[in-house]
Image 1 (cartoon, rainbow, N blue to C red):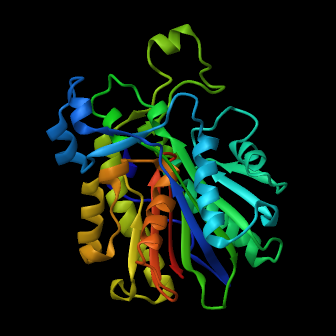
Image 2 (image 1 turned 30 degrees about the vertical axis):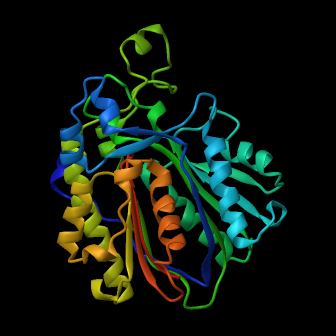
Length: 339
């Protein structure tokens, strides 16, 4: 497929300042599944760590839904912001593992929070949080809303086939949240770009469960309700796309890699992160890595890592932070935020 050998760049890079991330929050289910636990069921624990960098992933408890992990992350975020749910003007939930087809997970979260804000889901897989963050920034910039809760939440262990020894160990469950509001003129998205290339949709997809191929006994027996991934092709695309979109945003902002204080990439695979760091010339200590603990949590990945960095005092006012998410769709979103 042509897109593996070349990267489709986004049509434009824009700026959205006057925006501020007021608080962060995250949550991962209590149950931890170590590589050693998987080895008891025939998995190659050494292969997992060498090829992915993942040592552990968290798995939701029976009956624990996406809205439940989103709720815990949201509460942690609102507590940090000293903000009551009644003060939220809009709720955006980025997820590809909704509680149900309808209502939206955002509406279920709204009810559990005790909020009366409008609420909607955004489905852009591992780039979902970036799409939701930019959407929130637009509403803030226009003056429509002043407090927007953005949550990335996915229970990815529900989407993968336990018999797929190459894919199952990669994914975990979790949620991350940010509260977005007005900021100073020098705060916000100094530069951002969103992109999509549907030609690569078949590289990372769930074949059945929608209107194209509804679930039935045949599709279930064929395991077509599980996530399928062409790992090699996705890896090549992700490495090239990440570098390309980051360079686009750097050029737009007239910044260099040396001007960045921190980088938070989607936590998919340590080899992707290492390749991106080397290609861009980013020092190791500027790149947040926590996939060894959580694995790939899709839309939860970036806000979960961002909250970890924030709570560990790795972010201070004025810092320039690079964010980049990429995944199924194919979709991507990259931004430089001034905190």
